[in-house]
Image (tube, rainbow, N blue to C red; front, side):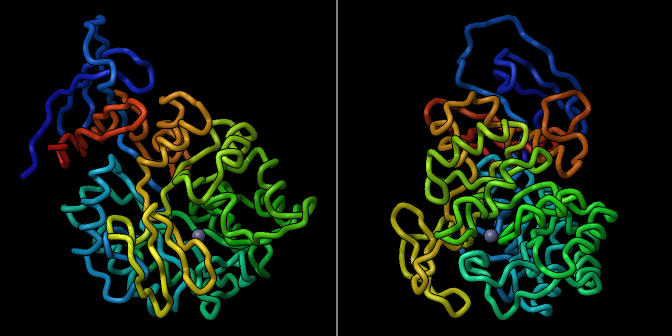
Length: 385
Ligand SMILES: [Zn+2]
């Protein structure tokens, strides 16, 4: 049984003021500003983090065979250690049968008390993406297909309505109509693993696409300097960007340009973390492919020398983004709290405010950011020892 927390004191990560938060029945009852006490300035309180792309953790992959509710729970518990109180399990391109089976497991896991509402929904990345090399990334070509609303309806049924985001390619035949259906059904449409033209991107956003998945990645290494999928997405004011700021997927200059072009309100940091997070560096076999996990946390498909997701938790991405851009701590925290809460319409979340669910993280933030306590619905689910 986890310890109940009735109140917690610290410095608000947003205002920099000392605050006392009282908690009742899993909700924030009141937030009181305290007089300056000279307390430890590095001891901060933040809303719990939300990670919109988690493929797995510590040898569990959500797309692999034999997924179980217990395995999902082990990922949830691992993420709590890094301050993540909400995440979107992400299923990547696979066979229809595999996706249906795993969506059913995820739907069951969402209902389990042990996961404590840490899964606000599921992210389906694929299978309706570009089959082109470079753009499809590590997604197996044989399972990539055209958007099929009937098939997707089956996925959503298996998921008991829990799919809240789909990543697709706007240039694939039938995608516009598909995007419209998604929007009508309240599903966030993300553009990713695509080689869409300026017009195709514009039309997709007009139809309701709202975010670019791991922007700057899943793109060919050599592109036309004028006509490529990056500029039109960067220029489009409606489109947010999800960024993997693990120090591996994007350079410092790229992150700076994306931050400056979009502004902090349109950035969502994500981990794209895979089963290799928390595993020792080695060579592994994964779905019939050789994968190398390097000492610095690079996950490489050995045959193609290509990145296949990350092994670095979201928390480290916050540090990297802050160091690269020189933004404030409150800005970087906004990208994993307020911004995803808004995009996914998560109620009572993403801010330290009376009435909100008491999902909170106590942090120590100097150059590194360390999680000291993670609280979900007023229960202490992780404490650093
Ligand atoms: Zn991807």
